[in-house]
Length: 349
Image 1 (tube, rainbow, N blue to C red):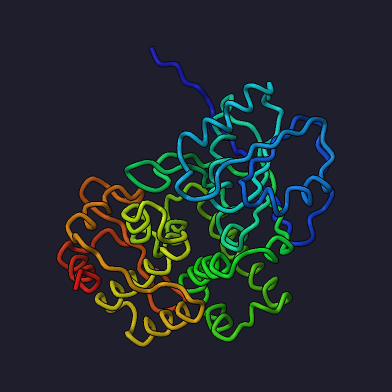
Image 2: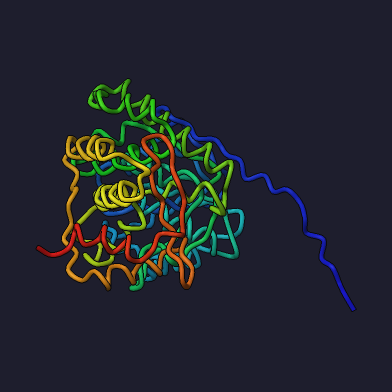
């Protein structure tokens, strides 16, 4: 006997990304703001002034990548249960990428899924992490290995929040902007070489370009079965670096910066990128005080960690390799000898 469940249908997960001053938001339902200790002190009152809701709760987590774990997820979920949130309730992710990922993941699993919106407060989360529906948390095996695709209902990007952002955090966000330019838009890369991001109008334009680039890629490949994986340029290396340093030494964008340098070296070895192009990218990273060096203490251990990457299989590692500036190649055919030869350039001296 065969029983078929006809579930083939189109689900519209479309949503708007508003890049402007935060508007007044009205929700006739229970709403929980999920934020961290830093953002709550700086901007929580600003957000509350823009909210008109039936019932408001605030969940404050510790600030830092090291808190992107099961304990923080439990704190969010327990608060929702204790305050009797239901499937019509709403979460607001109010912070950087860590808060966005954990809020989205909690929304995806609470009562099998409730809505959430993103109000990102860092440059990195505004241009990248808040867009695309990737949610999750870290564990001892690596970064974002537990998670779900769960699209927000809306994203509100207000550059006001960047006025209190430390320069180190701002620069980390630039790494994600550069990532999208190198892989998808050579003209955007050229623009970034001379752009003055201290000029608010220029910064707004850069944010719009980066968000539009990511939005186009996500629309083509929402669940990362193909081209969306290219947005992980630098991340295959970066995630190993972050895990090795226990998420305490580098901000995510800083680790991505180093990862891009490593990926560029792989591209040079494969004749996909010239040494001059790799040097140009490296110089732009240095311009924004981003790290470009890392000492690998155990090359075999570093290499083995690649197999925990979500894009890899049991026997093959998938690398995102820039093809010049403005194009990209996704490959699982890099030999171990080739990859190790690249890692050796970053080995202990």
